[in-house]
Image 1 (cartoon, rainbow, N blue to C red):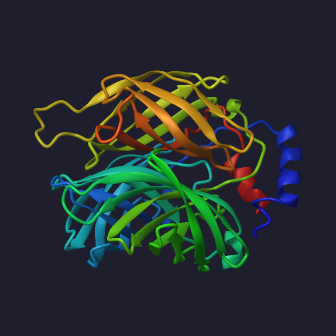
Image 2 (image 1 turned 135 degrees about the vertical axis):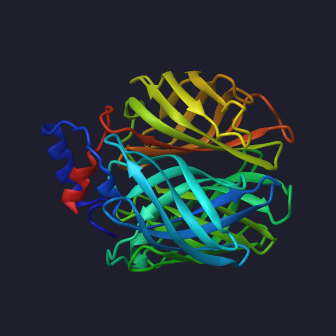
Length: 400
């Protein structure tokens, strides 16, 4: 396991943090330079879903210089152009041009870079109306090995069938792996029932690529079709295909065992919701919210994807309340309250804060709805630069 994730570096970090206040991080488009890889679910206007795995390389001007994509349907192609911009706070916008069966321009409507500068989260829309939300991790020759997977991981996945209109759910999985990449765990299926992962066997390549498989308590084999960790091993993204003709994609977070509190939520967060209405319509909303030291949500705004008809208004609203709590192990509970949104109140069913305290993942349900009329939600939050943050990203990199 890499020393910068725990051990001596943690002791040095605590000493330094006692004397050095957290600093605002400045960003620029040049921070996007390099190769990035990620996986996410994409949904069509006909409610067909599939996962996409992409690798894209940007230069210091944010221009796309090369890239490839492949899908759960066995299709593949290249990314031939496009560009992205990032402002001084870490907010990202731009586009990518796909060539092949998924040909078209992918517009990045909103994205945010983590303080580590090695992970971004974004929401996109293709010209044909296809929507997606997901994570890109910087792909570097970091000399990783499978032993670096040792530890506890929380996975947040959308899970769906192969056909048009097939049910889509979230599954939160907690997995413990040894230094051979083997382990087991448990899962929560949309807050309705829980089960176990009886075995897992994963490998980690030198540049952070993940492969392998897991088996659940229904004897389903879950094959990792693609996966990627970020350079500091704190999070990653993954796409899976199951033997029961279902597939999924999402993100995962390394779970450090202790040292969190509700005060770690204090600040302003970029927030990305991927939600499913009536089990098969997948949408996203993106925005920001402010949280005080007691975990109370004190404000914020959100908007949805732009409508196909430019004469129609873009869905939008505000964060009007709610309270969250963070336990010592980083698990998150509580709720969000939004205006002008289905269900309005999001009850958090499970959540995990990242070790840097600058990002978090959450799964929940909107309102008091029950199956099958519920609205399911998977949320990723990135703390905005300049907010009252915990660990300082550059300091973590220095300790590596």
